[in-house]
Image (cartoon, rainbow, N blue to C red; front, side, top):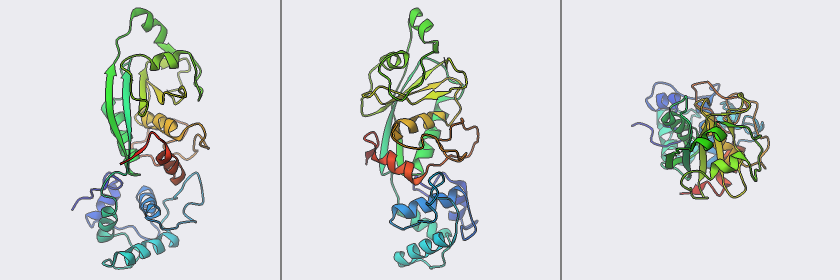
Length: 278
């Protein structure tokens, strides 16, 4: 009985738990524990110790606090053995509590450049990282924009500084190219490069046009990262998190493992008008 919840079905260790090949218990750690903790939090269980560090919350450490929350979850189910261990039956029960996405964010893609990372991979990565928190990333539209020679010369390199709030300049002009996208969606624009070659994306946009810009040389998680900036907004602090596991780490992620978000980031994203309840 494979896991079906978007929160769990992409996580390798949790799939092994469901297949009765391993368990999560006191002493376990990592992303699978983090996702279980997030699910427990969303079910109303309190984890003050595990959520004490805002840069890594919940912490993905299966300590006594998490064990007690699992026991309470098992007791509340009425059918599970209350041993405080996430085994096959418990992960299946937890999986059944989150059968569907609870929120969705629609993305509209516009491109004037061929990206090094295949588009489908960048999109799939964005879908997976947000699915862990019940947020569905939906492809709303896509368009490759043919530029005039003058536009090609102008936009071959984006020289404008990346600031949060933009009112004019190249970024703003870019967002007006191509077919207009609904203002309730996030517009993702792919360009060749920025003046600073170390900058691979920018979440800055005009007040009424939620959008981000990603360069052709961006890595596989950068689209998800820049969308995160748009959803979190400039009011969220810290803007970047100095934990390499987090999607919003300031340095582009080359690791294959799926990045995570904190419970505070997830709460802010879910409150965005761009993140619609399903």
